Length: 186
Image 1 (cartoon, rainbow, N blue to C red):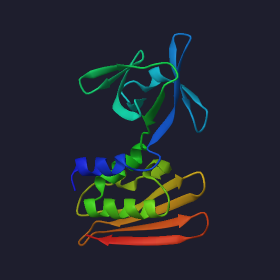
Image 2 (image 1 turned 180 degrees about the horizontal axis):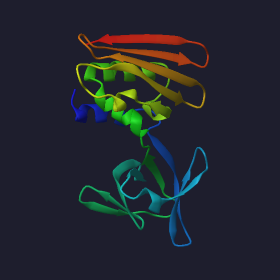
Image 3 (image 1 turned 180 degrees about the vertical axis):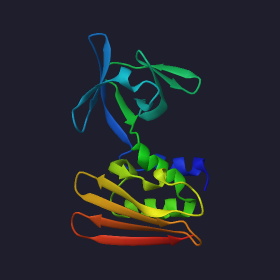
Image 4 (image 1 turned 60 degrees about the horizontal axis):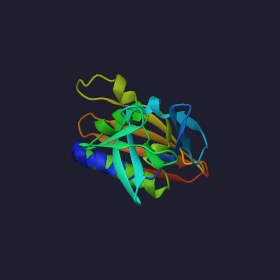
């Protein structure tokens, strides 16, 4: 599985965006998250992916600043009280971890996480032990990931062993006590 296919799977994850309205207040564009009602200056989100609702369709682009969005070769001027979606950023250590595991393991992990009603964008903490390992003859260790979907917490332990045969084992534990274990032998 190449990087493009991985990004496509991540793009369709639940809760990948914060949705809300924008307002032009005191010569500044302000985003109001419809869920949390928090306010954020759009100028703090320069070059981030956003989508603008126009004619009942989402137009995807990147925020350039000063109320403008680049959609391919087109420039969109934002309008007061318009609805937009801002792409959430993955926790950096989780992003690195996802890029380091093989394609089948990536898909298996993601589908299991989704089946438990969690999105990859629900991650609130990730310790990626792989980052600190030198790739000599093989490595092993454990990564710790915490997800919060606002209804439940999911703790994931990723046991990896990349010696002779290689394996990835994910232990999912929900705050309800439900446990799920998956293992992928490479």
